[in-house]
Length: 459
Length: 158
Image 1 (spheres, each protein chain N blue to C red):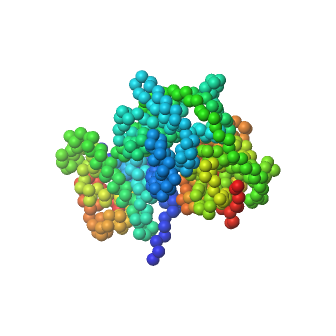
Image 2: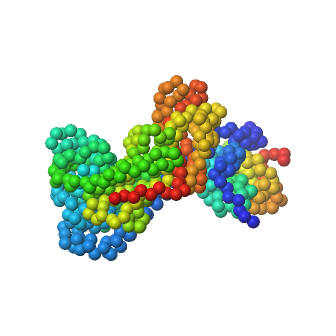
Image 3: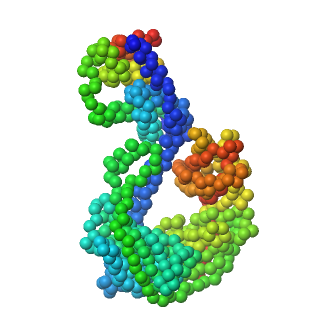
């Protein structure tokens, strides 16, 4: 074969495009989302460091707190550890902390549980890694709950959510080996006697080089940059002291936002936090999917958003909302106001939408939302939606369960979002249905700022 | 003059319009489907991340093509470490006579010449477009192109 022919063949071969070339845009989009997520994780740890610096200053300028710490040398380390949480700091200062001093040994390793703070709403467990535990610089210690039972009846305890802190190599000394778990009983009740089983897992972070190697072999997957190994399973039996009675204030105030009523029912103050109950009447034409709140105490803006020490829970039917903010149990402010600054509304008529994949239409038409791109591959269709948002708002738009027009149910593999400026992109992949139509259930909606915030005076 | 910022939507449209050209250029360098796709993906991503380094949006195509060529070099460099060097011919002239595969001959061209013929014949760029991407005069493109084809013993009518 002469060279001219081979040359022509090679050129022709370059015109034979592989199927995967059609996915360039999609892979690019996914990677942008992944990188954005990485940045976010980094940002949140920076914020945490910033927060701890602020609270160190607070301890220094608060003589009452500093004195209390000095008087309880044993508990001093714990006070130091929770200094960023005002409710817990106040609880410790007022001796509302229980020293349980429990240890469990699984044959190889030891886990300590020296302190507990509990009231009707919250159980805060302070675990401690023993001093002899050798931690590598790329390791994080995490504790996961496996089981919680009523210590008297043996029944499974339900109706709570929990969050847990991790322990890094760098943070170990600073945190005295403490790992805090926070159980928030939004619906269930915390029994006085409990048995818990927890698993300690060591998370090994891959270095950026290793992480890169993983990415190169499988560039299109959302790969984790760490792996876990189990260190052991530990059991504790905890007998809690009597909980103090909450301080309850009736409010019963009605407010109207965009023609939707919201009723601020009451406020309950516990040692670990203050709970404000808000209900949404069923007569409302829209479901309230979220309220952006800000708490102002004695004219100082102290808490906002859904960040540290500020959490909100909704029930499944979205008929009520509970806001949990820091406690005033031991330190009542003169004046306290809750501001509603923004709202997420979902019109009840627009909860379910039908997507016509081939014609790229959404029925009913949703203002500010469009189906921008459809990529069909094999039996699947990847849908890219574009939604108008304010600032860098970012939220999940769809329920993971969706239907075809016959009523058959399917599950979405996942939902990717990326946002910049005033646009958010959402990527989902569905099985391509016979008639090209799927029915999606909307979950969250864009945030709308109120021109004038609603002010709710709290007792 | 104000720089018009390239938004994501415009960038994706650009990618859709140019991805086949990008693939062909990558294939010209790498002669391998998977590696070429990797190079395109990486160039597309890097191009977007560093889009603000680009002074004039009208040079986007030139610019992303340059990034792609760099990505191809990286892949070739990494790949060479794994390859058994004995496979490569010692002398390109001999290799043509020995009728060794033309891909190897392209791989062994001096880089200045290789760039030109890949952009011209795989990428489908004109002489002046190629000159713009490489930052050399039109005349140099013609000379290098001729020289490369001579080494390859290929006759192409322009």
